[in-house]
Every structure is written in structure tokens, then in C-alpha cells.
Length: 259
Image (cartoon, rainbow, N blue to C red; front, side):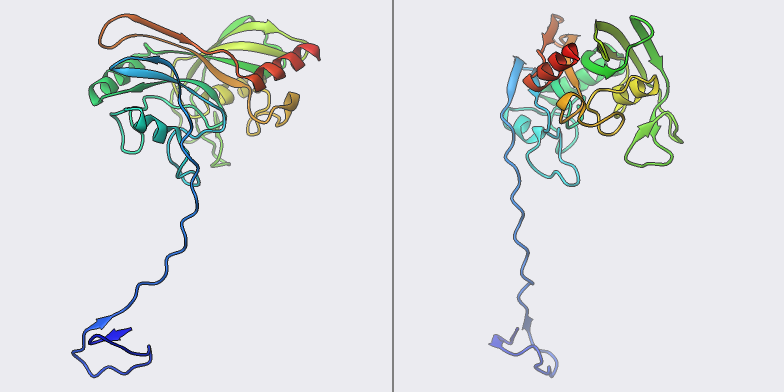
């Protein structure tokens, strides 16, 4: 502590009117944050880009995940528009879901893409491997979803805050104990596909929250955003981008075929 420019002990008695300078407490060393992931770009033009998000990457900063997010990499790639800290991000994927995201490069593009989402004109298709066999080759699940009444970390149909949610599915491949489904989102609620499929007794393989963790050796849920299709908000051209299954899901699918 400095009193009138002189170093004094903390127990020094003040007379009144002195100028005091106190060193701020030492700040704990900042924990190292993960580096932003490398971007794999599936489509790119002056207005927008479609990127491949790997599993295990958080889309935007959240408690416990301040760095190493996709948002950081997108900002460096020129993404813009939308909320602070989420540049250009029009929709999201769960941390352990891989696949395609469309991202705006300007506030105007962001607003136009948002309108596509609101009008349900952004086609989002996923490949999901479920435990069990569906009763029909295709179907629609129309059931509101919200935060679970009893478990704040889960979302479910048993909720006090229901929001409309519609999921369409079609059978891609029937397997001995599993089924590969192509799933299309009409709405985009948190954990929507995982909650809806679990609600009809077809939990996503490997899902630690709504299914059985470790199924087929999976370290995450078998869910991949495999296709994005929409009319370009500036040019009017059809944009249709597909993404193949990543290696961990290919291996799990082969294991399911052999079971």
C-alpha cells in the first residue's frame, strides 16, 4: 500500500486526507482455451457459406465452453449478422451432432436466411441410426417440446413450456436391431430429433441423454446433418448441399449391419 507515495504496511494508521494507492489483487491465470476448429467449407459465395461441423465442437460460446467454438472460426471466415458472439449463425447443431450449417456473411443475408427458416423453406435432412424398427416406412411426429418438468438438462413432451415441433422421417435401411432413418426437420427445437424419436420408442443409437450410451461402440449420438437445400436468398438459384457420414458413424453403421 502506498500512502502519499510512500510504501506503508497494511496496518498503517491513517490521519485523514492522505492519497492511497492499493495494488489490485492478483488475478488467477486464465485457463487456456481451445483453438477454433478448422473450417471445412461445402459451399461458399459472397453472401453465405455452408460449413461442415465436426462432432464434439460447440457452435457458439456457452458456460463451460468459452473458446474453441465454431463461431470463432466463422468470424475469422467473414461470417456476419445475428447475435453478438454468434456471427451469421442461422440455425445450430448439438455439440455431438455433425454435419452441415448455413452461415450468413452479412446482416442482410442473415435476415433473409432467417425468413427462410421462419417460412420453413430451409430443408434440413439428417441421417440417424435408431435402436429398434419403425412401424412404418415413413411418418410424422407432431408433438410440442419444451424443457422437461423434472430434469432441467433434458427436453421432452412432458413440459410446462411446450413449443410446436414437427419431425418427418423415412426409412433408409432396415437392419437386424436398428434402422437408418432420413429425418427432416420442419421446426428446430432443442434436441428435437432425439426427443421425438425417443418418444416413439426409437432412440438414437449412442445417445447418452435420450437413449443408450456406447451403443455399437459410439462415443456420441448417431446423428448427422446430411443435407441442406434452399433457394438462394439473393440469386434465386437452388442450393443443395450434401455431406457423407463421417468415419465414426460409418463404422457404427457397419457394426449394426453385422449384428
